[in-house]
Length: 296
Image (tube, rainbow, N blue to C red; front, side):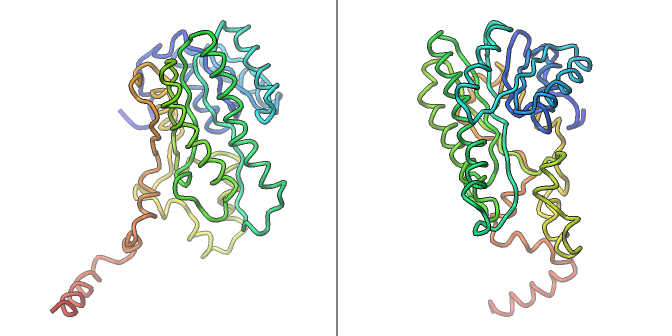
C-alpha cells in the first residue's frame, strides 16, 4: 500500500449525507471525491455555482455517486439555512458537515484595510459558525446525531505573522471545535478538526507562496519543502483519507481532537535549534570539539 491510495474499506460511508463548504475546488473537491467513492451523498457549496456544477458533473461521472451543487455564501445565515433545507429535501437528512470554505493571502498587517481583514474573518470564522449553528440546531431538534469536521491550520494555536486575519479566524474555529465537542456530545454530535500543512492547490498556492514574483534567494527561503522534515508536500488523498476516517463511524470515540497532518513542519519550526539541520555532517566534529573545549 502507498499513502496516495484510499484507506477505508468500500462503502464505509454508505447512506451518509455530508455538506462540504468550499467543495468545488482544492482540498474540498478532493475530500468530496473520496466521500463519494465510499458511498456518501455530498452537497458541495460555494458562491460560484458554475464551478460547483462543473465539479458535480465531473465527480458524479467519475464515482457514480450523488453530488448536489448548491450556491451559498456561508457568511449569510439565511443562505446557510436554505442550503440545509435543500439538502434535507433532496437526501432526507444531513449527517455531517465539513467546514472547509476559507480565504487567505499573505500581507504585512499594517498594509491591510479593515475590509480585507473582514473578508477573511467572515468567510472562515463566521462561515464556520453559521453552518455549525444551522446544522447543530437541526440535529438537536430532531434528536439526530451528527459529525462536524473543521479544517483549521497549525498556526491556529501558535499564530503567524503575515496571515493575521486567517490566524485569528482559524483560532476561533479551533475554539469552536473544542468547545462544542464538550457541549454537544450529549446530543450525539462529535466535533473534530484537521490542521493541514502545505497541500498544493490551484490558486491558493500561488497566493501564499508567490515564488515567481520573488528573487530566487528569497523564493528558496519561503519554499515550504525546506521547512518540512519529510521534505515533501502533502498529497490530497492523504488528507481525504484522514477526513473520511473522522467523518465515519470508525472514529466514533474521537471527539474534540485536532489532527495535524504536515510532515512535522510546525514542530520543526517550534524547536529552538531545529535550524541546525543545515549544518553539514563533516562540521559536527568541529562543533563537538569546540563545545567540549568550552565545557572543559
